Length: 146
Image (tube, rainbow, N blue to C red; front, side, top):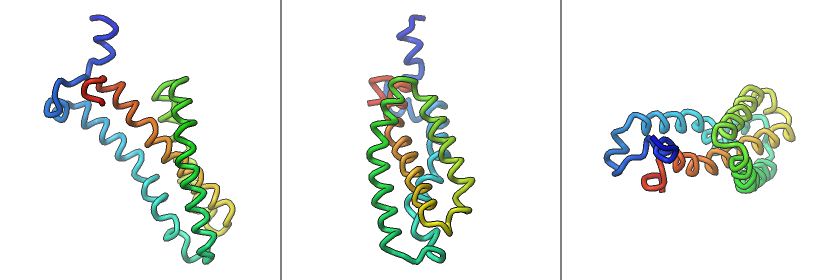
């Protein structure tokens, strides 16, 4: 088996064949469970602190800064992906998001700390959304992945 054949070992020849493969379901569950918390918190950041932070303008500012972090971090995550690979980036994003999830309940009373945590989570979201398509394409091959 050549290097090229090993590289695209899981490449399916059709979409129906790909959906039936075990690796398809494993990767979908990995992406679903690893990014679900990030999606939940970044989309409900106002609801989470509406009883402790009553300043709606500041909460809107958190959303704007988080959105900018989401968009700009995609370039940085993709640069890191090009230099180190998918595994390093994915584990970095997971580690950052776990640290934020472990500390976010202590920051709901401190506006600036909460802003930083939501910014970091939005950067993690940018990491998930930035490297997932490229990672899937390298896993499934150029024919099915694109």
